[in-house]
Image (cartoon, rainbow, N blue to C red; front, side, top):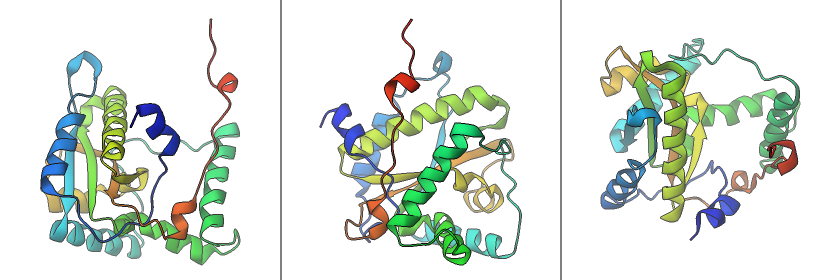
Length: 219
């Protein structure tokens, strides 16, 4: 499958079947992602893949953290609020998601429950946390984004679906504790992945893409 075909067909998946990815396939996918480019070849990514009992323990702790009323305390700057056209696109994405699962805009409880699914990894068999040394700041974040996109494309080539999740970087403390990460390592975001449940309504979500002329200028 060509990269262009993958980009045309790929969607964010939020429901998965109970089938883990084989260990040898995981090894092959993450080995390929190591070929991602990075600034000055620093390769700052430290990917933490959780599965099985570790993933379940982490899911429980994250849900407990949320239900306690704790406020997000991300390792990196998640403070900026979307404005203008970016805010409009955010609303459009949310509308597409909630429309697919039949949740009305005014149904705040149902929306909160749908949001909570982020920290349950959407019942995916695996999740990966994208981490890096905190001092790398914006340059490291650029490299992690490139790495995550490469990983996503390689997964798609192997028939594996995923969902990128900024939410998985909002409560780093349980992750750091359970995975025994050093204090200088920051958790930027994460991704749940596995085999898509094609029968799930939530996986019917589709979002628009901006016209080329509104995003690219040729000089």
